[in-house]
Amino acid sequence: MLDIHSHIVFAVDDGSEDLAESVAMLDAAKAAGIDCIYATPHMKSKDTDVTPIHRNFLALKPYAEERRIALRLGFEYNISAIDTTRFDRVREFVLRDADTLLLEMPFSHWPPEWRRIVTGIQKLGLQIIVAHPERYLPIQRDHELLNELVDRGCLLQCNASSILSSKVEKRRAVDYIREMGRLDFVATDAHSTQEYGLFRKAVQKVGAEINYPAF
Ligand SMILES: [Fe+2]
View 1 (cartoon, helix red, strand yellow):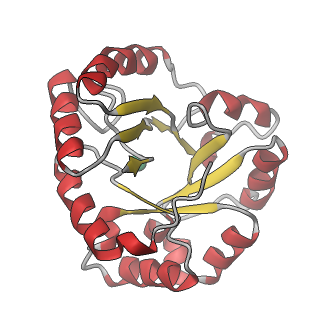
View 2 (tube, rainbow, N blue to C red):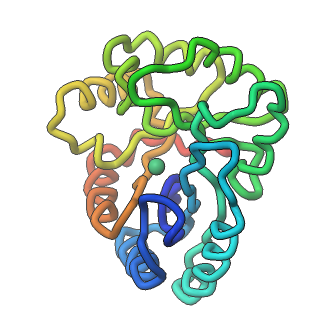
């Protein structure tokens, strides 16, 4: 199974703290039936130094190969980090081997120009996967935004933890996405080993509904 969103690269964001934790995450992923992982460190500022990300990703890769897990690099790119005068710069941060950007929105206040940014990315010929839309306040308040994202050609990725969440607002947004038939991806968004057990449970619950569109 594919996991398109994880913070498995160690010591670069709020995910895994060190190599040992990342290797434990690989083992937990394998036990959950995952055989392809996109490592997607946070990119919250356009000035972030990506050198340690590439270095630590490469350090982890042999451990993934030992476990027959395909480990690929991507980023979780926050819309506020996008240089709107140079959209082409996001090309460096797409999911490896795919013309696809995993896009994170702010949790409470979306920038007024978010639609222009989405269009600017798409004009580069890039596909957009919106990371965990069910977690964003604007969407929890107005499910119509989900229709708008889909109408604009975006794919949707829900977190496994949201599918099992007891928080009503999050669950309602997930249910809306399920009713739309747009559970395109379910991902761990793993920051530690614990999310992989949730992933397995979530897939047991909604696995038949996941689209996994080619990208
Ligand atoms: Fe994430």
